[in-house]
Length: 72
Image 1 (cartoon, rainbow, N blue to C red):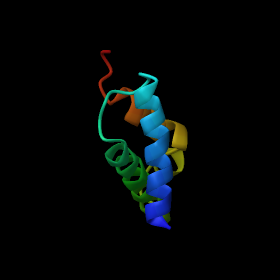
Image 2: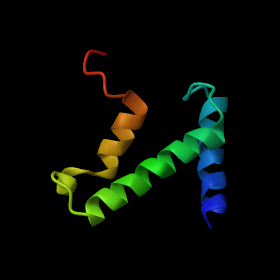
Image 3: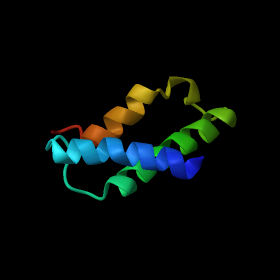
Image 4: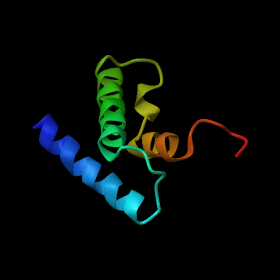
């Protein structure tokens, strides 16, 4: 199941690269980074870490798409 999901996410990134929406990085690598982030967030919430309730998918997407640099 992981491999299938990774392939699907990779195809989304590949489409974005082809449309020049995303930089040209390996699509499967970008998919793996997103999936790893989501797994980390799920574990973080499962362990009820401080601030876990405020972590959202929008937050993860923003970090992935825009980075953590405030001065852009």
